[in-house]
Amino acid sequence: MEKVAIFVDVQNVYYTCRQTCGGNFDYNAFWARVTTGRQLVGAYAYAVDRGDDKQRQFQNILRAIGFEVKLKPFIQRADGSAKGDWDVGITIDMLESATVADTLVLVSGDGDFAILADKLRRDYGKRVEVYGAPALSARALMDAASEFIPIEGDLLL
Image (cartoon, rainbow, N blue to C red; front, top):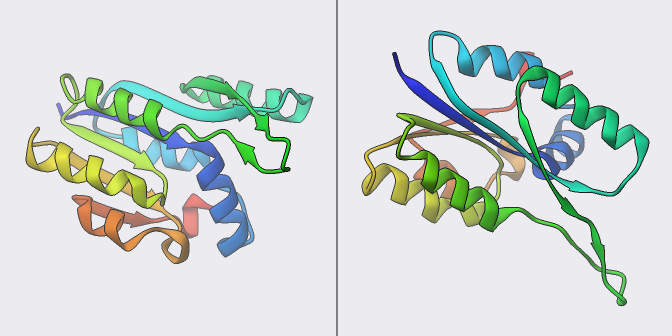
C-alpha cells in the first residue's frame, strides 16, 4: 500500500482560499481524498499561535481530524511587520518523511517550496502532490510538483 505523509501550511491555505475563493479549505474533505486507499505515515499542520480561543478551537479540530499541529509564536516587530512562517520546519519534516513515505502531500502555494519539491522527486524518487489555490500558487511550485491539485469545488466550504 502506498505510504503518504501530509504537510499543511495553515496560514498560506487560509489566506489564499479566503482571498481567491471567498471560502475556507475543507480539511475533512481533503483528509478523505488524500488518505483513501493509502497508508498514512504522518500528517502535520503548521500554524502560528496568536493565543486566541477561536484559533485554539480550530487547532483542536485539526487534531481531531488526525493532524499533529505544530505551533510557532506570532512575532510582531516594532515596525509593525510580522513574522511567523514555517518554511524551514516544513522543509525539514518533508525531507525526514521521505525516508518512510512514497508520496508527500504539501498544501501551500508558496514558491519557496519549489526547490524542495524538485529535490524530493529527482533525488529521492518521491511523488510530490501539491494542493493550492491556483491564482495564488507559484508557477515554479506547480511545475516542480508531480501533480498540482487546485483547491476548488469539494475542497472548499
